[in-house]
Image 1 (cartoon, rainbow, N blue to C red):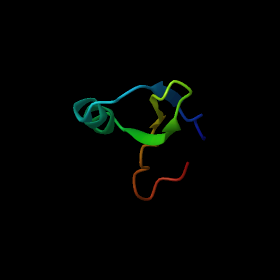
Image 2: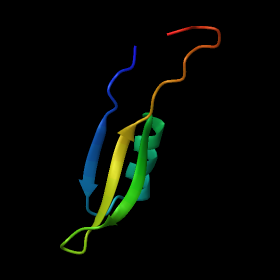
Image 3: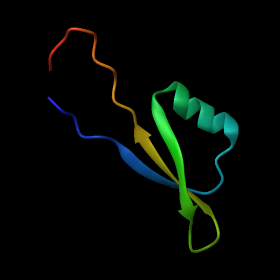
Image 4: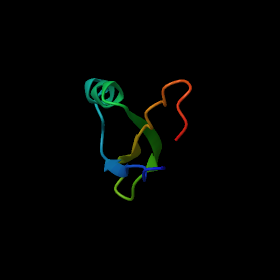
Length: 57
């Protein structure tokens, strides 16, 4: 069964330490452009957990 993916938008500077914490917790952080006020905009997504080998969903 597919679960809906988590996706949020983050506006503003993201320090590298915070980005690393996102990655450690299973999220991807991707720069998607600049906002109207000149601030960076990032997309944060929860990465799907890998299925154990041999297991069928």
